[in-house]
Image 1: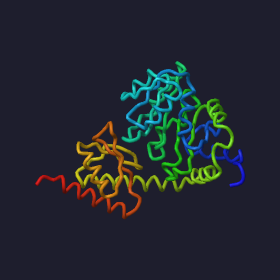
Image 2: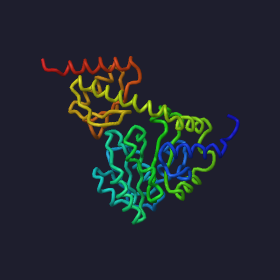
Image 3: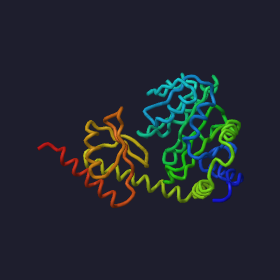
Image 4: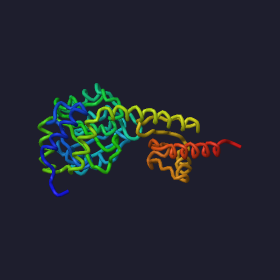
Length: 293
């Protein structure tokens, strides 16, 4: 394209995103070329100190906090986040779908605010999560930054679009650091169109919920019980996860394994009937092979 983005379109996108995500106003929303670019900038909103990330989860949060000069640790207890200067969690979590309630998060945010700390809640999967637990509407209290990802729910990761939602003064600082024209014209237009289409979003949530249920049933027929996830992905925890990973891989079905959690796998939802049939056959063959005798 031969023209730079119009500043007014970025404001239009912020307004649409505020309405879609439940933020107080457009001034609370910072559009960015994906959330990845925001992570070290958000981690730098507080002076270097202790950063705790509730894990196991997306590892880029820890890396970004370290870039910002924090001493970083992954913790497994939600209560420990209160000890940090920078507290980070993904809600719903990737890969297990764990959800922390809004009540608990607001209590933690109050503790962070009282000592000049910061709570960062990555709601990348909240589009398919319990949206009543979102903190997007509470950012004017201060001490809270919420991240929202566009590409996951809308299936448009290559568009590179994400949002930080924060107190207006914090949002202004982040916008200044990103500079003008940070979001490309196609991303602006796709974002405005998609986030405005409330009917499509409702229909897709229903479609994905049914697909997730179907995936759970497919695993169950193979003797595998899903242990969590969202309607975009499912999580399993079984002793022979490595064997299942290899069996699916031999059929060209890629799932996510974890070197530090060898009993766990994350599986995305198939997109076509052909893919569903391939998965059913692969799971059936694997289940047959593991039966004694």
